Length: 483
Picture 1 (cartoon, rainbow, N blue to C red):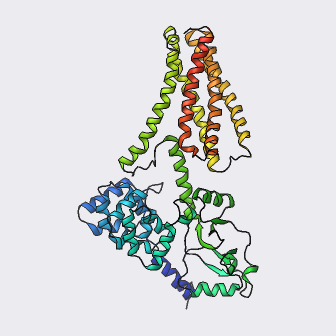
Picture 2 (picture 1 turned 60 degrees about the vertical axis):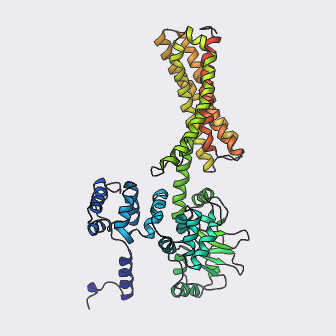
Picture 3 (picture 1 turned 180 degrees about the horizontal axis):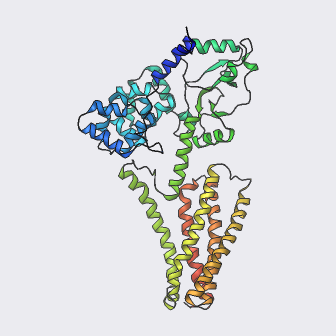
């Protein structure tokens, strides 16, 4: 027989055929734009087909999408169209689709399903993905779903839910591969081939002692390239990064980033292996934590466009009220110099410039500091060095802006004294902004408060108040005006 008729061995051909059957069809270029996003016309076409009752046509179009793109489709349609789309697609709304879906959108769809359906979906997912679906449900709904699950799956989910939110215990997968330290490479290969209950996705095999404590890890590539009679302990890497089960997920992400991990073992307080965390889960955490810090700086709540209006309102309005209180502090300082402003109207025109530039300078420093704290780049060892660094930068920035603003003011108002006053005020306020931008988040961090939450309000209050006080105070002291 010609080799070209059958280029692969029979076993390899069967494996390749099986893999092709399991993979979803690849999307065509007509559904995605150049940025791999669903085209608006494709989204409209699917909804139009669903509303027209052409279910098969809608399913055929959506069937070519990857599960992540199907999840995007649900996020792009309106809240009113999602139940119809779910009904039309039916079993195409698979566990993989739900695992990729936005939390708020997923919660809405889960509410439409019976507990038995949710239990069936959760049973097909890895523990961490199943927990992500169940953890946000109401307590009575959770219990109904758990009762409908198989005892083994239910026990794993209940164990995960016993850990605090946003910890390694919630994030980890309970499905992993571990072997005793006395076996050979051949024993490991035989077990991988014969045990049908092993998890399907893993990169490392954990070697454990009789107390089930990890003593090393071994990559699959090492096992495949090592003779069968070699002891696994001679192949494994003894240095490993272990994740405590109660570690915060942000710290987990930092460890993955720092040590370039693909997966890591999770251990309980006794040091026993209880699960593993993989890099695909950490990517989501990094994105989530980075987004949270940005949104907290602005007081925008979760900042999700799918979040219910009432929750968005509640999250935003309390920070606006707090901001109103700090604005009153700055306003009261302006009120102290009401007489001076009446004597020289130009002061009123220039005050917002001093406060605005100072506020921007403070925000720049604040953003850098909060990021450094989140990435563990700013610690007790280098905090004072960071403060002095920002002081130097603030003086350089302040001098540059002061020269520009002072010269422009002196020429525009034909008043060199006024130009000197605004220049001095700029230097003072930008210097204060730089110090406040680094000192306030550091102080909040030392007090075990999240520096991303409240820092922006205090920095803004400081720069506004100091800007008005410096500018108006210097105007009075220089003799331009009087109280």
